[in-house]
Length: 113
Image (tube, rainbow, N blue to C red; front, side, top):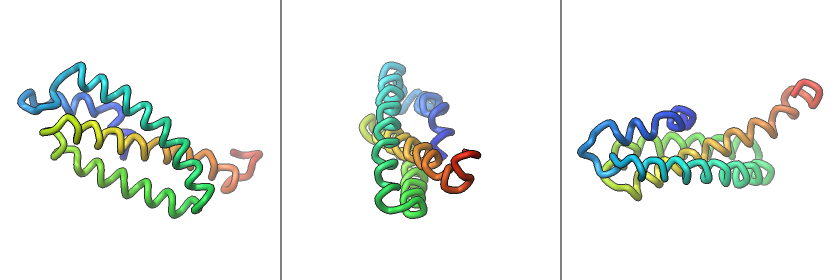
């Protein structure tokens, strides 16, 4: 779900000019901070999957991604809430990518990963 947000968060924020977040410079800042959140998510969730296992970590990150994306329409009235929902979703998306990389060799073997 978070991959869709990567390309559409700015368009979503600008969709209604009456919202607080309909500011191009703010939405560009959100994109930059979201990229950092994604990078930190890769490190955090990569370590987490090593500690608690793939199934629990992936389930947790998927649920968090869904919840933050469901909160998006309500976050349009606050810059802080919009920033938190976008960064939270991208933090989880980064974790999903990191988990795929660690699971491929286990599922398909090192030769086929």
